[in-house]
Image (tube, rainbow, N blue to C red):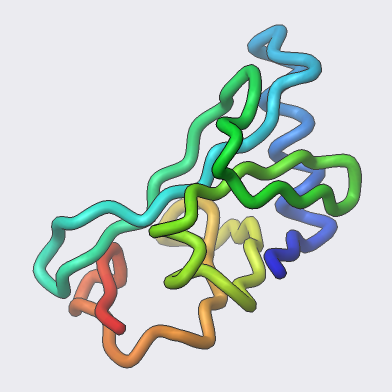
Length: 107
């Protein structure tokens, strides 16, 4: 199961409205890269593939491929704003370590 906080849902819906992406879902992926091995990838997509896991939380549709889902199961997506910037934060219980800058992870 993947969940999204109120702040993150609000931001996703705000971006979708600004970019005229109504009806699209949020694609969540884990891709290889970064100094710790994996990076998160988010983008809007029209429709899921037949193999995708599909979730909807707080009005946000989310699509996750089976390979990525094994790394994302149980993750909560948040949106945070701080002095260092703003962005989506993944609270992922499967992560065993992250890189120094926090942009990549390993499991």
